[in-house]
Structures are given as C-alpha cells and as structure tokens.
Length: 187
Image 1 (spheres, helix red, strand yellow):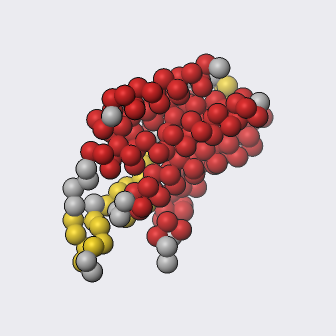
Image 2: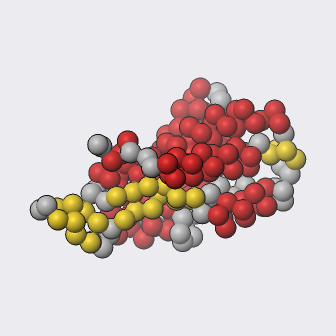
C-alpha cells in the first residue's frame, strides 16, 4: 500500500480534531465568536490544513522517511485560550517524521540533512501561499486570509515552527517566502 495514502485510525482522529480546533479559532472575529464564520471556516481550514500537512507528509515520504500527523495538546489548548485575547495561534500539531529509510532491504536510521528538513518544512507554508494566491485571484478574501495567516505563522523563524528549519537551510529562500506571506496578508 502506498504510504502517502495510508492513515491509521489515530492519525485520522487527530487530523479531524486539529481541523475542528482551527475551525473554532478562525470563527472568531477579533475576540468575538462569529457563528456565521463556522461553515466557511470549516471548509477553508479543512482544505488549507489538509493541504499543508499532507504536503509535509508527502515530501517526507518522497525522501524515504515515514511520516504521520500528530496533534500536540499543549499548543492546541494554548491556541484555544489565546483566541479569546484576539491572538490566532494556528499550531495544533505537526507531521512527525521518523528518521528511517528503507534501503538495500534493510531499514536504516539516518540523520536528516539540513536541506531535506528545510525542503520538508517549506512545502507546507508554500502550499498555503499558493492557495492564498488562488483565493486572492478568485476574490475569496476570507480563505485568502486563512492561508496567508497559516503560511505567515508557520514561517516565523521560531523553533519548532517550519520557518526555523527553512531559515537554517536557506536564508534567502526563507526571506522570500516570509515576505510573500506578509504581502498576501495585507493585500
């Protein structure tokens, strides 16, 4: 079975829980919950989050690693609490990458290269930048904003966020995509 299309029951539950958490967060208009945003948030966040996390998973698998999404309860709870202050922290979990490659009929433990980690980290925010641009052209501002925000937040150069790994790999690449995410936030 192709590992990219394989999701264990726990991973499916955790992905769905993360989508629900992010839907709740993006249903706030400032510090006030707006039920009118619930359905568009669910659809927009579902698409944006799935594409982002599956981009990480797929690129890790293409490089020979095992990968699956895992929810992280402390940051999920912090995200829920902070939304009441007007802060949208979009960090319910991450794609867990196992440093094993199948080679020569044996599993071998390998250390990730800086380049591999940078590429795996970049594809998630890059997918959101692409979606944000598509929604900008389509005139769907709310979905453009969700994707620009997810890209911007994930490109912050703060460990363990994607931006810290991209910056470690390529300062110029990180700066380009970080600035692009900011531009998409303000247009």
